[in-house]
Length: 186
Image (cartoon, rainbow, N blue to C red):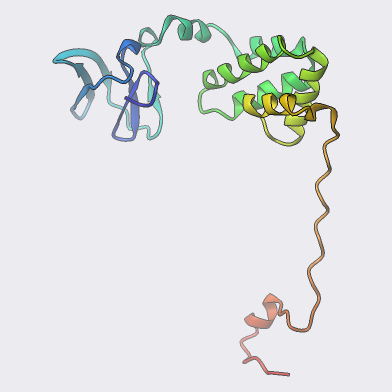
C-alpha cells in the first residue's frame, strides 16, 4: 500500500483499493491490459492498466466517505470560504491547490488553515496568509508556524538586491578561458 492512502504502487502507477485495506498486504496481478488486486485470495479491485507514470487511478468507492464528500467540492468553493477571511487567504488557497498534482490533495491543507481561524482572529489569520504568500511558503504548516511564532505582525523583509560581481585582477571572466589562447602569467 502507498503510505496511508488507499492506493497500491505498481509499475510506476498507483491503483486504488478499498480504504479498509490501508496498510494491509495485498497481491497484485497484471496483464498487458489489466491490474487486479487481491487480499487473502479475494479480488478487491480491478483496473485498466495505465501507462501514465507517477499518476493514480482511483475508484471513488474506494475512498472513505469523508473523502468522497471532498469530490463534490470545487476549488472555487474553498476559495470563496477563504475570501471571507480575506484576499491573502484566498490567494494562499489557490496557490496550495495549484501546487498539487490533484487539487483534492490541497483541500486538507486549506481546511487546516480555515480551522486555524478558530484559535486566531481573522485579522491575524489573514496577515499570516499574506506573509506565507509573500515568502512563497504556501502550506498549512507555514501558516501555523507564522501564527504560533507571532510572525504575522512583522513586515516581510525585501530580498537583498543582487551584488555586483567582484572585480579583482585574480578573477578571470569566461571570455578569458574561451579565447583559445594559452593564459599568460603576470
